[in-house]
Length: 257
Ligand SMILES: Nc1ncnc2c1ncn2[C@@H]1O[C@H](COP(=O)(O)OP(=O)(O)O)[C@@H](O)[C@H]1O
Ligand SMILES: [Mg+2]
Image (cartoon, rainbow, N blue to C red; front, side, top):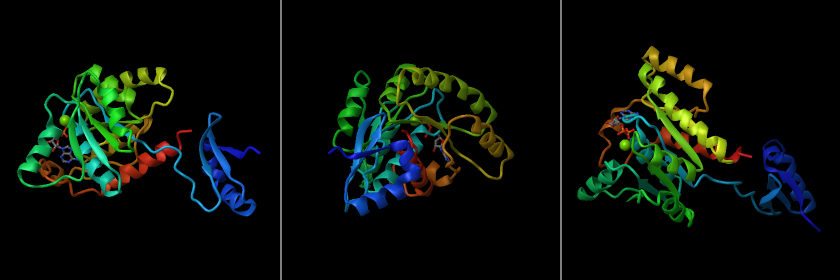
């Protein structure tokens, strides 16, 4: 007899009832997404995650918005959550790779590894790295539409850092336009803005925070911290906001039904 099924979207509300039913009847329930089986809730086990993000990309056509800083700190936070993480450095300035090299020169071991992207086969490389369950974070260069598109296409979630300045908000439009265009062609496309260098003492930071509510965005904001400025070449240690960001990412994927 076929298992009873429940859509992953309605599962969010129905989970307590479904779990009770599995327990009481002893019969498995299959979770589906668009009619396809995703996971099965078996008596005596916990439901498996519908789909955890495996490939993330930090994208912005603008430089200096915190792509590399967020990449490295998020990588450390995800590693601290018990995942294997690889940063794929697709920027020709190789800041992430140089961060790792500086750390190695000082005998500091990062809790993740950084590898250089082969820019001609970025998507294939990301998929191969993610195949064994490793979380892959792609750091990208500014002003490179081709790399931005490849990284965004292969990623489960695209994070778009933006700084709380009028100029940055103005420039954000071009990146969002490009992502919206990809969204038209990619069925499971997820992107959201991350407000970076938030300083609660500045009125503009609050204005920017409000303005971003018009777009898909992460609730988590990354504060402006001297520790981030000094972090190059060290094992990232200020991870609280990045832990929150990872939590939010897991939720984004969980609700992507
Ligand atoms: N939240 C933050 N707080 C303080 N400094 C930051 C923060 N985010 C980025 N920076 C600093 O801003 C500069 C640009 O950041 P970076 O990550 O290199 O941007 P991108 O990779 O987008 O070019 C770096 O000097 C970095 O240390
Ligand atoms: Mg960078």
